[in-house]
Length: 252
Length: 251
Image 1 (cartoon, rainbow over the protein chains, first blue to last red):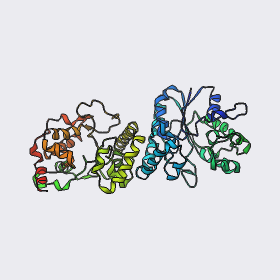
Image 2 (cartoon, each protein chain N blue to C red; image 1 turned 90 degrees about the vertical axis):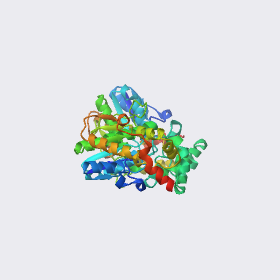
Image 3 (tube, rainbow over the protein chains, first blue to last red; image 1 turned 180 degrees about the vertical axis):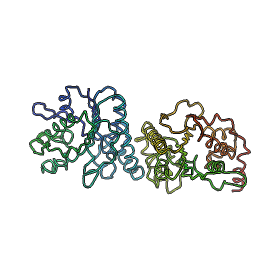
Image 4 (cartoon, chains in turn brown, orange; image 1 turned 45 degrees about the vertical axis):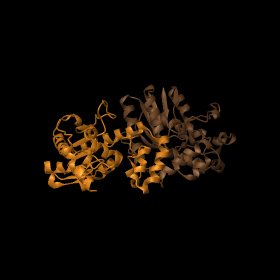
């Protein structure tokens, strides 16, 4: 059985858009099919690295294969479960967009952010979560794929090249650069760009339906290796708007 | 040269209590006298273990031997440098003791704490720092002593972290020594409830010497875990806080 952990890059929602016949399916399901194995997805959109790690600690022994997707390390790590949707809140401008019942907590977070946020500590935690996930999977002979969408991306690095942490203790492949694929889809589609200015991203895992399948192939091909691979350099990804239609035709 | 990292248990203040002629010194100064080695402390009162870790990463290469004191692990690890003195602020009771310029920041911390406090997260940071510090010392062949003042005090029987990565002995329960001093002295008990603790390293003048002796011996021990509060050499007599009583009478 395959266990999947992480944020929106691994979340299988929105489930109402799943359509196997039309090949509109998140990469996790394609991977399950390739591996002829069941999947269990613990990934939740907008959550922190610590959230994914605690889910992992509670359940990892249930699986013989794991994909761990490392989210943006700069999020609030320790929000109580009922507030996990606030993990990105740091700017006063974020508060008015929150649900009314979250606005007070959101404003407390914004007020505390300049006092409490330390980039070096969050990076330290990121490194140690990575090391610990890899150590435990090695110890219990679990096949692990490290999916690091924000590494080798312009989200972390102006030139899109670089690693925030040291991968040397990896026990499975490290797949970086997925954020670049997601961003290129937006940049290549005026319609998607316009939509995302006002509405939620309905693409599964922030990539189009074709690219979800390609990503699952890349994960499958690398599963038994310790390769460090920038997936954004893979020429199989396609950026055609026809693979985004489901994300336009539905509303959230 | 010995490098010392940590919080108030590694700090040499309050310096106005220091009286070299009468042997009233913080334990790092006694350690320097005992060993003949230079002891440089990067300890700072009220700080978090993460703050000490940053100091360690920055300065450890300068030393042959390391003593690392781990703070109470539920302090704020995440504070920006200019707010580090608020690391100990974990409940509203302490808010009133803050300097006015830190009051606003302290209030912001107290407001957000119920939404972000996570003991497991703090323990993970503690464990990660412990492992990393000990691994570095092992790799660089630097003898290390780990001091965990807040662990195994009184009836505590379990450590909150796994010490299997320790590259040197772990000295616990120093807080119990500090609190036992206060429990045996009404003056001291009242003193630490109402104002900052004037003892060096929260120990009386006799016990700082005992502590220095234990630390010196610990560089040569094979014991992995040493419970300091069980050491019969510690003394709990008011005679060893006379310098504080006299000082406060004159203030």
